[in-house]
Amino acid sequence: MYWKSLIGFILIMGVHGLKAQEKGKVMVIKDPKIDSLISRRLELSRAGLAGNTVTLSGFRVQIFSGLDRQQAYAEQVKFKTQFPGINTYISYVQPNYRLRVGDFRTRLEAEKLMNELKKLYPSMFIFSEMIILK
Image (cartoon, rainbow, N blue to C red):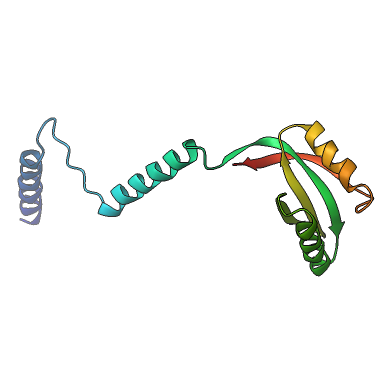
């Protein structure tokens, strides 16, 4: 008796499931926030293409490398007061803090800055990395 009831129930559910499915029709259920996120992403993408900022491979000059975080920030302030138009970037790669300056497309541009800074910063290096152009 139990088996007959179980088989009957399975057959009824199977037939009901077949009726619920319609050929060629898909129902998509999604959170409305997805549409707002997609539109926001498109806005940001268009803003980037409009020329606000571009990231590409270039060069920066490292003017400081040391263990002391406070000294790295002090060097950044010192550099910014003397050269306000040049961007500065502090990074930490264990165990050193590094201060790199500039966003140069060519190595020659970076070398020109190095020549200007020789007297202020005796040990400088040029590094190839991703830069930000406006």
